[in-house]
Amino acid sequence: MTLWVPARRPASQEVGFGLVFFPRLAQADIIPLTHAIWATAETELLEHIEVRHADGSMHEWTKVTYYALKGLRHFHTDTVDMRVADWALAQC
Image 1 (cartoon, rainbow, N blue to C red):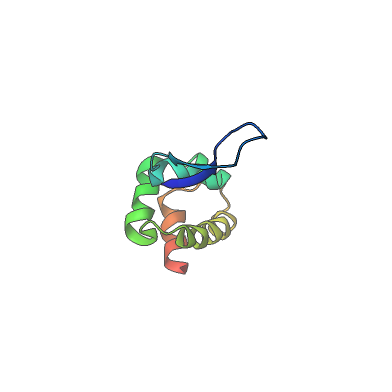
Image 2: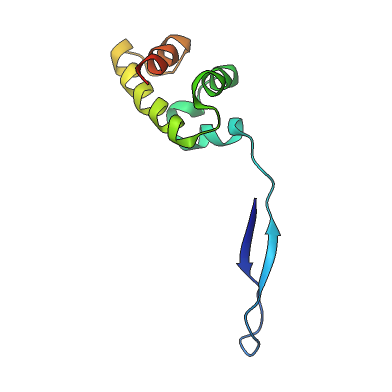
């Protein structure tokens, strides 16, 4: 990802912009940071959801998270497992 950020210069000089490169993060690194239910989920489960439904879309991950939270209440559990994930994906 590339962002334009202001370059740090003394106040007496003109403000310029410089190009800064950030490494692209993998979905597996980002998703556990988006909600607490994914922080404890297994990597294989996250990959299963990514391949089967989300396909790199954060919007789809939002829907899966919403239905996974409903699934946690439905199954009376506090961790997302394959059963809860499949139920949530069926609701999407």
